[in-house]
Image 1 (tube, helix red, strand yellow):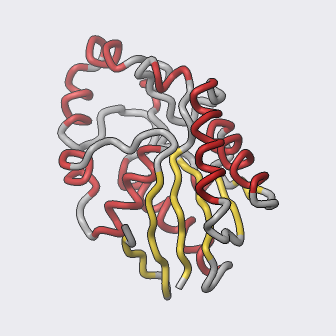
Image 2 (cartoon, helix red, strand yellow):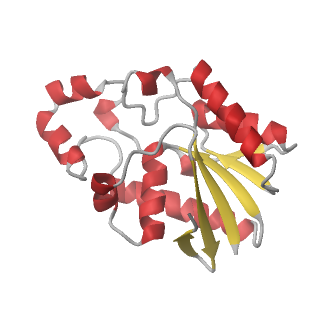
Length: 193
């Protein structure tokens, strides 16, 4: 069984401004770097064998700060990226509500709101496949994976065995710098926390 510690990247200015980021690549802000340092302190006790992150700089920098603390390098992979939010990228929630009211209603209700970009189903398939591949490369180890809010929601919904739309409607948002744990064994993903 591979144990995977999941971390959401530290805060960016766009997070603080309630801006949709998707594949856009804003850096961590000061609060985000502090969250990464706190993550590093937590992981120093976890005996992590490897660290993986999205290749977007907010996740990669969070992972590097944590990995440096435990003397590991970071493997960056696009498979751990955030969902591509298409035409919503860079817009605040209020701007999306104003410009795309029907799409925002669909999104708030657990569906796909943007018309370009990636569907939540495509995201789930990508993130689960990537994490199962990472686990297969590290049997019986503990691994850190640093990713993004929507990507982690998709993975946790899958591990819980519930539809992502239900998870998005009924569970609180995943906060920057927060942790969750899953196990992967023989390709089966399950929640540990």
